[in-house]
Image (cartoon, rainbow, N blue to C red; front, side, top):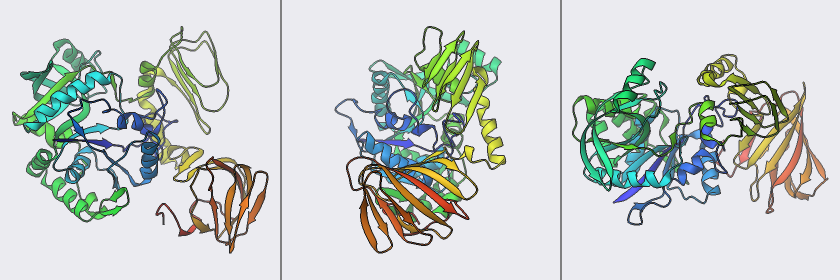
Length: 478
């Protein structure tokens, strides 16, 4: 039977602010090695037993992140069968339902894109056992053996042992608890009967659909309608917006798993694992997992420390100097600095909420913004001008467009640009420039095999990104 990875790549970009933002959440960040969290999730099943037929994954994400998902998948040479686009996140139960409709003849393993697992071989052993249970119509989850009375995680209460498969002991589930108080978490840890809820699930797609139809008919009906009315756009599949938004916003745990546990369903199973798992839920988690120096500091970028210990210090911009600091997180990006007590980094989301309430752009984007053709970095701005550094990836081109309220001046810094300006089409080499008057149709293209770097100076009465009329676009943007 086929095993289809279903990767949930949504996220609000709040927990690891200022590095993560709403338009660039943590699954797209490089935090532990040379790959992003999404890329490591895509690679997570590599090396499974040869007799397991792993098919190309399905990824579910927000419309705004679709090109990031496609680009990062391509960077690690991972084929994706389909990227399903949610018009708005409705939590994990509807996401798993539409994925099951897409792969209803497979066993699916649902994995969040923003977690890490460092012990892949042990995880693969657990997956092999989970497949055997899923073949027999079990809904399987993977519980993490706790090492602390963590109040930020949900817990799974293990019941009787069902069976053992190649050393993997599988238990019934008697209940779920969401983020208990400290005293309860301590009791759970002492009992040895509770596991952290990893958020990773495995079952036949058809079994999941049967359970959702039985327990959450409104979710099932909305998702079926959204899927049947959806439209394919190459690799992307857009769910029907009106139908999908009719679905209740609910998690897999609340919508189905807890109800099955309450009803003593005998086809509910948990596999206890110790696989080096983290949901990377706060900056303190990033410090926990990464390597540290002799003073127990994790340092990235241009940093000098003195009398500093137990800190995470990350510089994306310039030199950071610390003297006499302890148990702190210091993160410096191009447009924001965060300094926090390492034990209070769960509260970062409160700051992000304040930024949103004040309509500050720092909650949404970085100074550097990624586009399907490359990126741009706003390096200076005044009342009627803005300067940007544009990077156009090899073989990519911007849309054919015009602006009603601004003119642009382009200077080639690196590479060779193919420029369309009105009826003209010509090449610009390094140190050459051109002027795009207000209202003129234009396009920038990199036909070469190396990145193209442009300095763009905009001038006019309005410089917003919404002053664009697109006439032709490789990426289907309006």
